[in-house]
Image 1 (tube, rainbow, N blue to C red):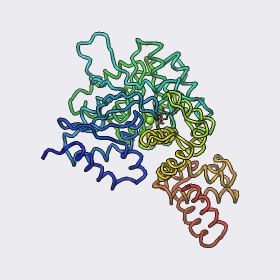
Image 2 (cartoon, rainbow, N blue to C red; image 1 turned 90 degrees about the horizontal axis):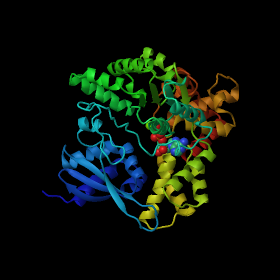
Image 3 (cartoon, helix red, strand yellow; image 1 turned 135 degrees about the horizontal axis):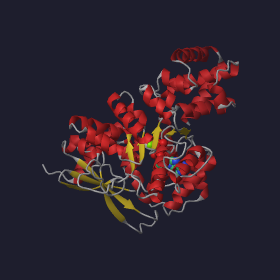
Image 4 (tube, rainbow, N blue to C red; image 1 turned 45 degrees about the vertical axis):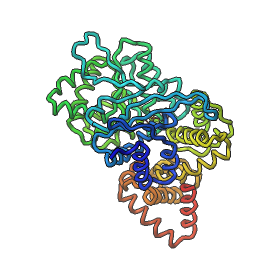
Length: 474
Ligand code: ADP
Ligand code: MG
C-alpha cells in the first residue's frame, strides 16, 4: 500500500479539481509540484511565498479534508518555496520549508503560528525565563516602508506612525483599524508593532489573531490555567489583536479580553485592534467592550485609487527584484480595483505563469491571465463594489446613494444597488441594508421586489439593470 508522493498528490488533485472553479485550479494548483512524502508529511513545492499564503488562506479547508481522506488524520502538509529573483531565467534557486500552519493537529498548531521559517514557541511557556523574551509574532515584511500611503489609508497610517513614536502615550489608544478584507489592516497593525520593536526593543509586543486568542482562551479553560493566560497577557506592552469581529458571540472570550484590555489600558499600554466593519456594526459584541473602543481612534482603510494601486504594484515588483513593463502594471492597476490582496494575487499569477511557461511577461499574457482571474474575483463581488459600479453608472456619489435622499433618481439607483446585491451575492438583506447607510431589511426586501417588477414593466430599468450586471460580470 505504499503510494508514491506523485500518486498521492494526483489523487488529491482529482478531488480538488471537482471542488473549485477551473480558473482557480489552473492558477493555484497546476503549478504545484509534489516533492516528497515521509512520515505522514507530504511536501509540495510552490512558486513563491505569496503562493503559499494564498493557498493557506483560501484553500486550507479543502486541502485539509482532501489530505486527511487520502492519508488519514495524522497527515501534515509542508511547503517548499522556490525563491527566484529573476522569473524568466531560472537562475537562482533556493528553497526552504515552512511547516503547514493549519493542517494536522489543531491544538498544537494554534500556538505554533509560523510567520517566517522559524516555529514560534508556546507563548505561555515562560517558566524559568527571568527576562521575558516573547516573540512578537510579526511578519517582517509588513513594515511601514512597504506600506504605500494614499488617500485611502492616510489617517490610519499617520496615527500608526505617531503611536510607534510614543506607544501608549498618544490619544490613539486603542487604535481601531477597520476595512473590508484585503485592504491592509493586518499589514498596518503589524507595521506599528515592528516599528515599536525597532525603536523600543525592550518593549513586549505581541500580535495575535482574535481566532488564536479565542482558542488559547478556550484551551486555558479546559486546562484550568485561565489565570496563567490572563497573567501572560497582562505583561504585554503593545497588544495587537487582529480581526476582533471573530469574538462575536464568544462571551467568555470577550469578558476575558475586556479585563485584559482594562488592565493594560490603565497602565498606559498600547492596544491595537482590527475589525472588518465599523465598531457600531459589531452586533454580538458586548456593549461594555464596545464602549471601550470609543476611548481611542477609529480609522478606516478604503479601497485604493488608481495611483495608489499602481504604486503598490511598483513597490512589490521592486521589492521582489523583478522587472515588469509599466504598461503591464498600468493594465493590472486599471482592472483590479477592489482589493490589494487581489492586486498582489494577480501579479503573482502572472509571474507564476510566465515562469512555468518560460514566457516573457507581456501585456498580451497579462490580459489572458487577468481574464481568468477576474472571473474568480467577480464571483466574490462585494456589496461595496456593486454600490460603486451603480454610482459610476448613474454618476452619483456613494455617500448620496447611502443617504436618506428620496429624490427619484437616487432612490431608483439605491434600489437597483440593493437588488443587484441580493441577486449577485450571498449577503443577507440585513447586511445589504447595513452597508447602504443602515437601511433595515424590509426596505431592502421592498427594493428587491420593486426592481423585479419594474424589470418586466419598464424598458429603461431593464436596460439599466442588464448594463450594470454586465459591467459587474465583465
Ligand atoms: P486585511 O488584513 O485588511 O485583510 P492585509 O493587511 O492582509 O489586509 O493586506 C493584504 C495584502 O495587501 C498584504 O499582502 C499587504 O501587504 C498588502 N497591502 C495592503 N495594504 C497595502 C499598502 N498600503 N501598501 C502595500 N501593500 C499593501
Ligand atoms: Mg487581515
